[in-house]
Image (cartoon, rainbow, N blue to C red):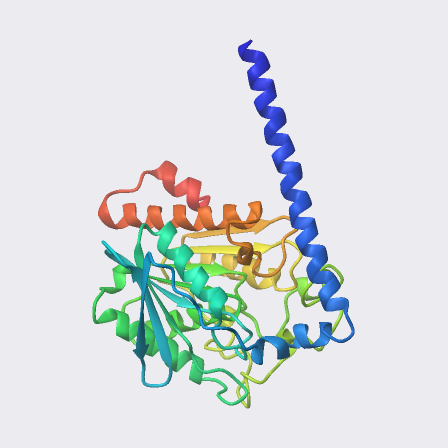
Length: 335
């Protein structure tokens, strides 16, 4: 009887895995159909839709409290629990959008998820200035101002910087700036499909060209847009952090999809950081697209990615509060 139950459970798990793959395929096909549309596709891939998006006011759930903060160059928001907030750590969230798209409601939902996986911690999200009106170094200046604002309440060893796409690259650029200027670096980095190479030199820009449902099959997408770079050298590490030096960086969690054109940005980053002695966990999700974590808890793959981010935060907790076992380090970073 016990054997029969075990076999039944294994079959159920196999069905769930197949279901996950089907769900991912459906979402992937939906994105591909949208980008293939002659009217919507080019505007979606270039970022025009994102840049001009008008959203209704975000309704903050009753369990949260949202505080508006004015930084020198931009506005920002602090999301906290309405009751019994956890002051043990804060996350500085740097949103994506190709450096041309401002913050949107999706990232307020991201903040809620970071709050949840972090056990009720504060999440601070600057609506940093974007190009073409504000090219480099505006975004970096605003990210630095947000970090310094958090330092008024939290020591650096209790701050984690998280970012997706351009926000992931900006998180790395900020850490390079902090290191170069003798400032203390954060406790860790969570990077979702980080855009680390604005020269688009990685091999996945070619090998995934026909596979990427969002940026593929065109050279007119926002990943080739130089509005943020302006007159600067795109190899400037504060613009393309892949060309920087990562010695002394905090632990990183890097997540990417196997079919996104920016895959090389994550793979090369992880390789270079590990060679510099940084603890890095690189997770490549098969069949996944750019920032698939936007599926949040509704898609199995994105749910696993957020659970992994929560585990990463717990490992950082143990590193700070007590000795982490070699087994836990190996399980997280594969060292």
